[in-house]
Image (cartoon, rainbow, N blue to C red; front, side):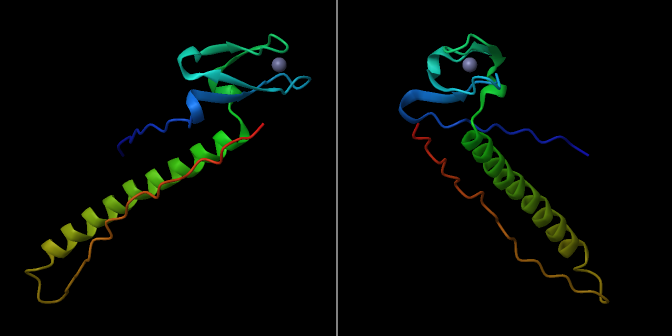
Length: 118
Ligand SMILES: [Zn+2]
């Protein structure tokens, strides 16, 4: 089993990334310029610090999930294509089985982020 790594960037409309405070008593939404994004950030309203990962808004989490799913699908279909074309090739000399495979060539759909309008 090999590990597949891919990166999905959080959409930054107008160069800003939306964040939601992790403090349950605050939960305020604030925007941070992409150039000011750090691994650990502070809420401008209550001062609670959190990792940038934990500050994701629901829209961002949803976007990342959907985009990752599409990417994973593309990778999985590519593996299936490889598997079946190998199978088809190796069965060519067999008189008992005929395997034909048309590659799926699946391409990840372009997921559009829903822009948060807070
Ligand atoms: Zn806060």
